[in-house]
Length: 198
Image (cartoon, rainbow, N blue to C red):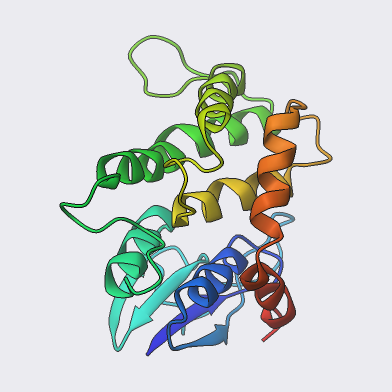
């Protein structure tokens, strides 16, 4: 049984979406976290080392950070083919997009959102203006990041794009808008939204 440590209206909600896609057995454990305005508190029941969400526990085995959770869950629950398994075609692209999400995409968008200058030189970061053409080019070639098949990588990216849809942080793109519509139209997304308050 997977326990998802969750706070409503956070990025943890996308893991309800993923768990629904996987048809995995899970329970939601609502936890408190620090909030951006300085309020809130770390919940001692939350196993994330910084008291953030998402985190999961699989009968006591803790996994945290979105890319790691996505990989763990799709490897553990392969029936619905939401992520290529080791040795299968598409695995390299899948892992690359998950790592790109954590190492490049999120820092780029956070930097833009916070109006921080992106470090140049040997740092792995680039700005949103360099990230978006890469993603748009990929999605121009096929409906999903790994090609024709929806994966957990799409859960991470599309829900992030949906979050920034009305923000100046996200440059307007019909390719991205259609991608988000395609992903959030999935029945598992609607089920996740209905369950996110516990």
